[in-house]
Image 1: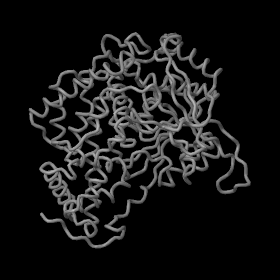
Image 2 (image 1 turned 180 degrees about the horizontal axis):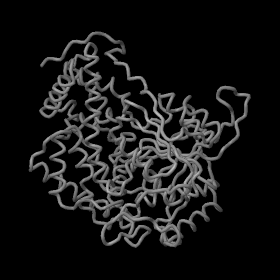
Image 3 (image 1 turned 90 degrees about the horizontal axis):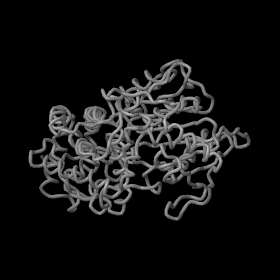
Image 4 (image 1 turned 180 degrees about the vertical axis):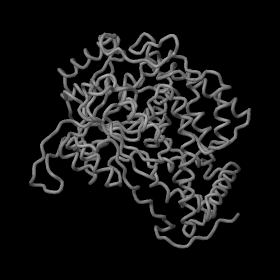
Length: 541
């Protein structure tokens, strides 16, 4: 999936690995008993349990408050060779407060470590433990050590790269909704060069950056933390390798939360999931335009979604002719509004920036959409991990005609994100490393403790069908739906109903019978220039 814009919006395991591909290409069920990777994971976990994690002051580069502690855990690069090359994953922690947030005199028993992954692939969870200072998380922070980490390849965890970061963050860029044949050829050449660059800059080790190895790393982290069984919450992509973990190590699970679930069906990983994501973003873009139209008196962008779209396209055309500030073109505009497809708390400021731009003031749009060269290294690294993991995880179409056919058809009905998503993932068509077959994610009755799935009904980044499919595959899983909402990642957010189910499960192990629903959280309030709601003038047409 395209990385959530953080949170986003993705090397290969050899075919002799745990999920050696059958000749007919069927999804596989991992051999949990005797494969080299399974034995290697057990060896690595035993060593990690003996070594533990020496938490101490975080490095100056991490620039975090003093309550956050940092350490490392060692894992094999290749689990089939646990005595071979090792890499270190950075880990962060804030200890359980042990105090009831509503009654400071009341002590709360510690329940262990609560490990979190924010998704990606390519996102770091190193700052996650600081979330315990927010009101929505204080009950969990009282009972658990909050633990975040940077997965393999990310940040300081044996980072990989596919391109010189100075060339990765750039602007202005085009973003044609219906690209010409010449533009397609340019992007094909870029995708081929990028795929080659991943191996050239990161070496043959890139094949070991995969979702299966992320799941194995998670078990080594569990052992290093001294936990017999894992309490884990994964968001977005984190739900996918969390589901792999539940499949590979069901007896090691204590409690597991899947927030905004990826569809884990083998045939969906990853090409079809990205097509489905593009279709869902079109619906979420329509939700955003409807909201803007409902507040036409504030933004003056149109009283109907169609009028809002007209003004958005007008801005695209103007930016193509003359980029704002010389840096913000149609590509940057689309990227900024894609963020609003993930999180509706972006809606007021994005609408305000579009309105101001069309009235002659480009400053808010430049501020929100311009590239940031100082973030180039981090962003290029995240994109490299995204590419390596998604390309390694599954077979992708290698014939450009398949991509062209599927995305051309989809763009006719879902133009907002279709081609942008295609270009993001196209290096996987030319990936120079052997790929694996996706695991058949599944937990049979009694094999796995009950788990919790959280999903927003109109989530675009991980469409709702993925949550339904994950529940079908994990026996005993319970699905809680935020009806009518589309924010990506809902646990610990603004919806008290959702948070009630999250707290009840994480703190007490309590779940509804099979499914439950919550009303949507309150929509964002419109913001006019200066922060006040007032009647707006319409931009000229």
